[in-house]
Image (cartoon, rainbow, N blue to C red; front, side, top):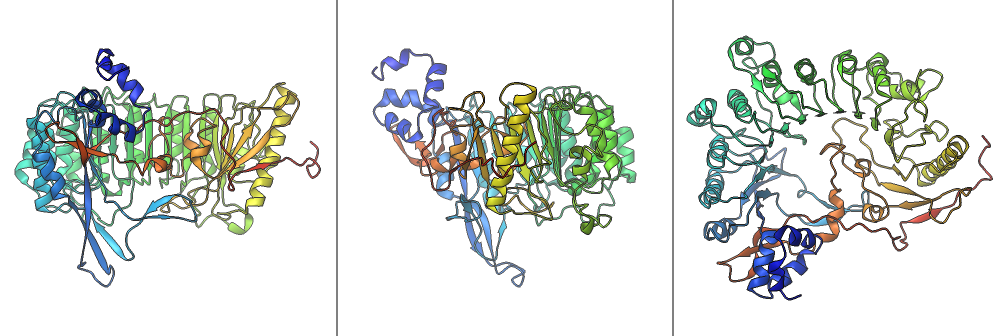
Amino acid sequence: MSSVGLLQVPPEVLEAIFQYVPRRDLKNFALSGPVALHIISPILYRRLSLRLVAVPHDCVNSRRYPCCEEHCLDVEAVDSVLNSTPRALNYVREFVIAPPERAAFRSTSRMQESYILPPGARPNRTLNDRDDFLLRLVLQKLGDASLDNFQSISIPNCDISTKTFAFILRSQPNLRSLKLGRIGVQKQFDHGEIAELERAQGALNLECLEFGEFKEELVFALLQTLRRCAGSLRELSIGSVHLSPVRTNPARARFSPGSREIQSRKRSDPKVSLPRLEKLEISFDTHFPGFLDLFGHLVENCHRLTRIRLNSCDYSHHFILDLIDRGGANIQSFQVDGCFWPSGSMRIFFHKLQPLHTLKLNSHGNVFISDIEPVLEHRDSLKRLWIGCGILGPRINIEDGGDCLCLQTFFDPDTCQYPINSENWPLLEELAMPFVPWEMIPLVHNLRILRLLPTSLDPQRPRNDTEHVVTRFVKKLWEHSMSLYHQRPKLEAVVTGIGRPDRYEIETGTASYYIIRYDGTGDHERPRVKRYSDLTRVLKVCAWSYLFEPRTLDGFWEDARRSSITCSEQQDDDRNYYIEGRRGVGRGIYDSPPLPEPRYHTLVPRSRRDSDIEIDESDIDPF
């Protein structure tokens, strides 16, 4: 078919087809002629990306930090946007500011591409006054173009001023998604802009709102922004998932929980109604405890809230209880990672919640067995369960082996009333649990993915030991399913080698993926186990799962997204393009969207890091 004939095909059909074509081929097709360029433009130029440039400079505290780097906008890229015609910007739907590019190196621990700062460097993610002004010029250019399909702004990697935040809300009233980093943390406040944000009444169409750290002067402005999003907001994320050297609110006398002004505002301020809110995420709430105290009292009508994810939170337990009491009892997914709450808080949550479908308790602290035992009440409905060991505290005796309360609560049949097995947990499909001896791993017929987490006392295991545990567990599960259900078990993969045993440490370790292969085996033949080290190869033979992710701090369990390392094979693609008066395609600032990974159902070629593991029955005790 010629390119002219493609004009008769509906645009939605072309977009569905071309999303599986590599970017290089799309670029070459666009260079073939003006008709091809007209067809490909809505796909190639939907994202406008400005990449930050890292500029080294001397630090004020040179003893602690030998050098620093400042993140700045690329002036040439900004000029290209400002000089673009409205017709050239017509297809832009997303505006993104990307982090600086760095030299890649291959880490021996993860066997994947990683990016690090120079030795001793400290990044300064605050945009200077010039770059902050240039950013507003770019946003004004997009606003003047009157883009019909412009929907998203993402600036998660830098600190913008309050003036820029107010300008975004004022110039883009039809925006659907707004993802920001810190707002005015290291900037001088424009009190006029703050007052305007507090008085603004126009409705916003935001469906997704994300912002990181902020100063206490913005508390009421942000609450008013949430009121303006009441009719459309579906996703809300507060706080940054990454630790920051910036400490906000050094003296929290004004907005500390229970302060005089907070109590006064609880009585006088209007309510915040969020009838469409479905997903809520809070990270590092130590930066804004007073905001959560006030927000939790003012929020109402959140009956559609079904997913909550908390990361490294110490004060959010009262806020979550307020949400549950004000209509949030329909929560189906509850994910807690590295939170330290008063004893008894979790027990109250589980008693008030409806039957959960997804539960994650990882790196929790300051809890007793009585705090996590109510999880057993949700055993008939849970499909996804993550049970990680808590943080070692002063009341835990390491010598007695009491490093994990979850083992005796969920996996020990002598102490647990409803241990995890096929009968007590009939719907369980995905499970993450501490790495235990293979005799203690629960036998669940419907289990699809199993992830074994390193514990604090045993963070790493030899590869031979891991293979020994996995192969014997697979054999035991196969015999269990054949004897009770007369069919093969549903287990597809076992993930080992990656975990997060400490609250503030990233997930490290070399991941191993043991794929259970039933093809080529008869009804009475045991399955084969094949070990992979590359996730891209795993996804060609096994459906994606949240438990495959090396880093599970970002995103919800139910989100159907792919791991970031699966895109490593596309990093060499030339993804940046721009149109100059629609005369042709060249290297520039436009970034095409990420394409979905192709789904294959064929076996991948054998690699040195992949191996078949045969189950040796001679050294296995009979059951």
